[in-house]
Image (cartoon, one colour):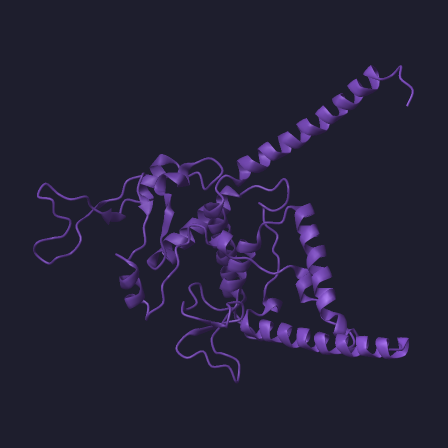
Length: 317
């Protein structure tokens, strides 16, 4: 085979595989969320030296307690965790007031019963600091029955279970002749995005996703999109989400209520930060220790180099 024919065959192969790659990418984008609605936010806990904002965590807990806890539990968190350093740091008096009306399933009574003999309801007792933030439902089946078959997820580590794509993943060929190389461009962009995230210590993908999810509800689905009896959300995979807008929808247009939008933005940001803390409550301590370790290693490296130079000063290299 001549060189000309070989090059022609290679070009055809690139075009075919590039077209397949473009089709696959388009199909993938259609199945998953609209990346244009997910943007990285500036968080106080971002970067190498970031830390949680105690006031923001308190506001975020208020949003969870007043809105989210009606359907979602945080079974890996105890009430006493809200008093720990690096978190909302509620005082004992504040926390006692917060859980004053909370109840949890009671242990078997003296007769060994856990349910009332009168109506069969579960026996309850006042919550203690050591109790978990339980789901409001007795079990998963009860939760699904109350939510039209949808199971509200536990929010304990939801910020670690969610994330957003690298910014570089959104790269698109700028010209038709670049289409065959789209797969290679996307892979190179992913490598570059990963390297950048490592260098900047990016780990706020879960908080970014939660914030974007809260801000991306729409009152009506776009024309041609059927979500049935579910709510439309630009970020949620498939766009059809069983959870109705918990904090409201973003108003657009000239007559939009700017104050309502500002409140939605603040609440979304606060609850995202709180859920990030719940997923990684020791972030402040970890970053503080990591910085100390880095400083120690830098000093140790300098001392070791000085010792090496001193010991081998009389030996020609």
